[in-house]
Length: 284
Image 1 (cartoon, rainbow, N blue to C red):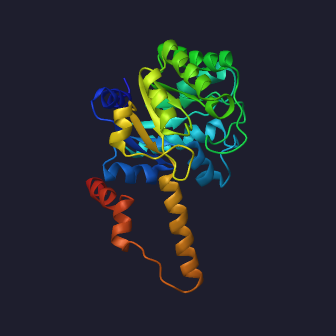
Image 2 (image 1 turned 30 degrees about the vertical axis):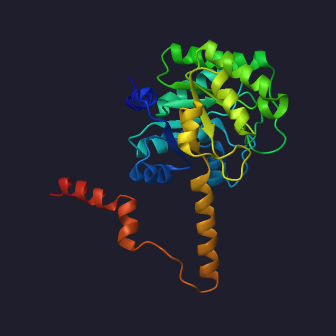
């Protein structure tokens, strides 16, 4: 068994709510681990932005997402959640995506019911497949898991934006019946909708907390009391890194010294000290 998948199962079985942060590359994930986060979430929005400088509208490919995840997984010792978008094709594509994400080192893959090309759950213009197609996608993913892919399946619905909260809840209930490990009702727009989801859907549930997004950002104790098991902040690191880079660039342009780490601190963060220590073992 993938030890990170086992770690994730243990974290989910614990009594505490699991708080995780988004990441977009190996360094951001490494920093999250150093700070004490028990797991990280590779956001499709963040990877598309950082790797391509393009929006999360289905432009990034399966191979690019898998390879980014492999690099992240290799850099950390904590479980990695991965955005699998719509699975990159039909049921057979979905099964391959699940297997390859497992091989890359992901502990959990998120799959959604949007029509391809998909887009960020808090942006305009979303559309979803019908319920039967949504269930078929998750069934294919679960089959891949049951056939040996060592990975958890998170089933996501974006139906709240297109069909309303009742349909979104009904889809999550059906995902649980199929055997999904975690459900994720994207972008509920009120506390009442969040409470209904937690009350009416069994199993592990995730809440997506995007600054200035559609879902209320509540204290974690309140989210746990509702019944959420996972709280993810998927875009915070990308957001603050963009702001910091902009501020630094404007400072450099105007001949003002930006606030930076010392060079020793910088080399420590990226692993020079560990590298030098190991390197000495191989010197004659």
